[in-house]
Length: 109
Ligand SMILES: [Zn+2]
Image (cartoon, rainbow, N blue to C red; front, top):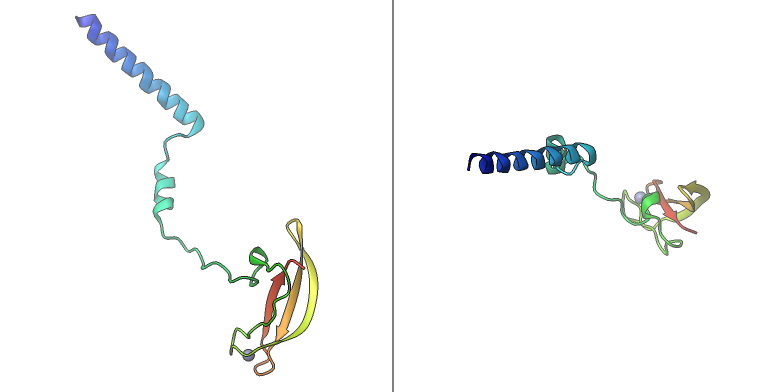
């Protein structure tokens, strides 16, 4: 009877120890710091609008681009090419005829 109890406790202890070793090696249980960071709202900025950043580049040139300052339709002012990651992007700059602000649009071609 005593050995049954001790044997059971021994098996449980061995399994717990093995589990801890495996977790230490492979990180199965999330660490307290990871859990705290996952729960944080964070400082994540809102995602960029289409064409506003290389990550959201448009497939082709946009038909009309509105000024980000005053919403007036802009005119294409200048374009250049750049490599972003493994893609070549066309960066088009549109100038607002009213307020002279530049709106930059990223396109795949
Ligand atoms: Zn404007």
